[in-house]
Figure 1: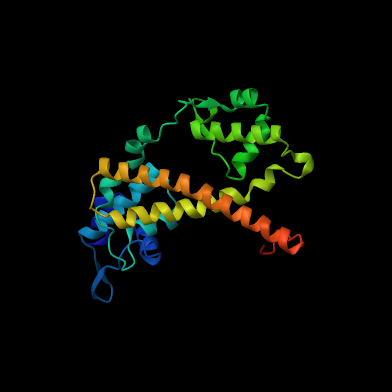
Figure 2: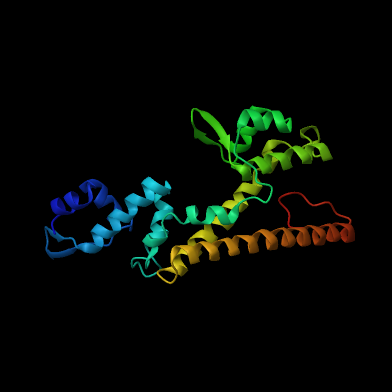
Length: 242
C-alpha cells in the first residue's frame, strides 16, 4: 500500500510514520523505484501496537522500541496478547494487610510526614502519586513505603543527621534499572508461549522471587562491606568501592 493508504488504515500521520522508520520502530518499506515506497501488513500491525502502548500503557518510545522489536529487528511474537497483563496480575499481588489507596493528605496525617515531603519523595521517584477524582492518591504499595519512611525516622534516621529526602535518590534509580530489565526481559522471552492468566501467574512468581532475593543480597553485601571497613580501619567515601 501507499503512504496515503497506510495513514488511512492506522490514523497515524506520514511525518510520524517517517519518524518511526528513522528511529527503528518501523521497518523500512519496500522501494521498487527511487521515489516509490510500498508498505505492508506488518507496518499496519506495528503502528497499531505502538499506538496502543502509548495510549493504554503510556510508555516512552525508547521502551516501546525495545518491546516491539527483538534483537533481530523482527516483531516480538505474540506480545499483543499480553497487553493489560497488569490487570490480571493485580489480584495476585494484593497486600496481605489489605491496605486501601489513600489521599496524600490522609497519609501525611497518619504517618506524621508532611504532604510536601511526600510530594518530594514522588519527585525523586521513591513513590508515585496518582491524580484522580481531583485529588492526589497513593496506592497500597506507596502508602506502605511512606509508612516505612516514617518508621525509619522514628528509629533515628532523621534529616538532621543527614538522612534527607535527597539521600534516598539512589534507590529509585537502582530499582528503575532492575525493573526495566526484568519487564523487558519477561516480555521479550514470552512471545506467544503463554496465555495471559499463565503469564500473570509467572510474572507474580518472578516478582515474589525478586522481592525475597534482592533484600537478602543487599543485607549480605552491606554486612560484608562493614566487615571490610572494620578490617581496614579506613572509612570510604560514597564514590569509593568498599
